Image (cartoon, rainbow, N blue to C red; front, top):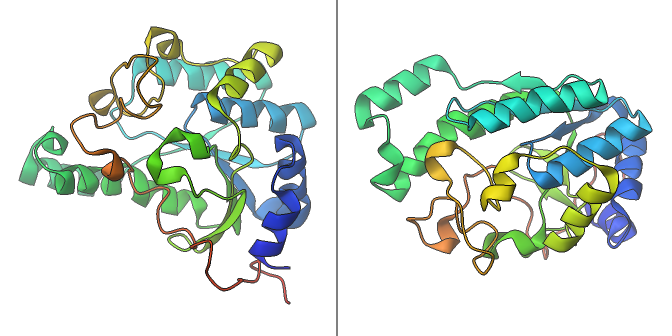
Length: 247
């Protein structure tokens, strides 16, 4: 089976169906990388409720909000799970700060991208290295850079299959699910933070602004990606065989 065939099978399916199929396909080679965002909390609840033994990982960039750490602890307690935390390489962080300053990201897009590489992309690659596929909470509605997100696609940057069970969800559906299932979420969302990342790079926005407009607010919309979700296979690319399978 190819990624395109699996995507065709799962496009439009319920999130729970997508995750179940991913678990059936990849088993212990499947990991869920959560940022503790509202979308990711829904996925965590689905995994925990079904007792699927899917590994959960998250990143601590060293610049997160206190509320994010509190939510991490609350989520582990609520669902009786462990989320493995990955950190940036100390040497890389120290070199970056020594060369360009503690708040380098405000000066140039290239500086911000370097900070994201050091604090996010490199730790994520280590977190994903043992696996063949990963689940994430991307939604097409989130930003102009995510409108082409597929439920199943090839992640060329990490050499894995990437699965986005909530790709076709809108924000209203996200919050309806959180309310219905009493899913824990960051109190920052109630303070106008529609998308939450590092404290230094996130601010509250109005309801009329885009979901991710509060992230790196000093940059143009087309630049607003940290690099974790770029490099996926173009929708018109040739079909790729799922890792470990044969056509």
